[in-house]
Amino acid sequence: MTLDHIGFYICHSIDRNPLRIMGRIAAPLFLYIMINSISHTRNKIKYILRLYSAHVLICLMTLFVTIVGNEQFGSHDQFSILSTFVYTAIFICIIEKMASSHKKITMNNLLLFSLAVAIIIIPIVIMLLFSRFEILYQIFLPNILIVPYSPLFILMGICWYFAKDKTKQVAILALFSFLSLMGTQLSAHFNIWIFMGFFNNIQFFMILFAPFIYLYNGRKGKSMKYFFYIYYPVHIFALMLIGQ
Image (tube, rainbow, N blue to C red; front, side, top):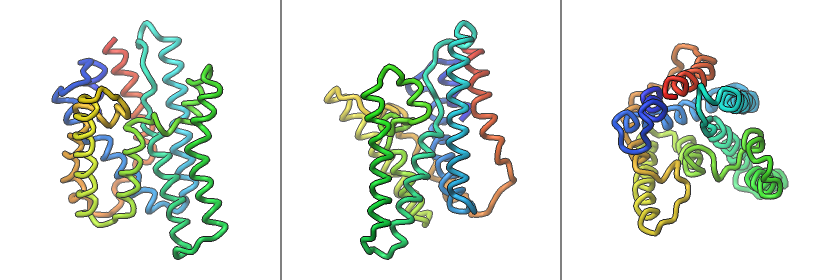
């Protein structure tokens, strides 16, 4: 992660810089940690709220730093990947609840399906109707279509969660990596640029994360629950300052 951000904020590279290629391991790594965390947590709702609260706080800090400290830090877009994780966790919970009804169509399932649709549509509609406040909406009600790494990354996380088996999870990673590669080529050929966080020249290299899936032993490591929430924004702000 840090290597990737050094490549972006200091080397100012968006292409095949070695640091950024190695950095493609980071996002799937943290996504994989997230889906395993939500699998083992005692309270999924509390976990999701913690992710959401951290996302909002990081975004507000970024907004403050890039407005008040524009000369020192420069102008930067929001970078919080936690909105992607929040959506992934929410849809995992909804699908899990629906699956627990043993394939019967119940009122509860219909409500859950309606909730899933509303979670997708409402932020998009609000942003279209009140685009003047888009910056704030993207913080508090992030548009799923433009979250970091795109909705396809969310889908990969959901597939990982329900696959369980490591070989299947590696196959899913390989599938989405090649989807990124092919989508990038097609986007360039037809000059249609969508989901650029996923369809770009380096995202295919997230395939490098594959060996780490096999290395995971399923056990809880050293408890560092809040370290990432602190290190993630702080090191980026430091690199913004250095890069400026």
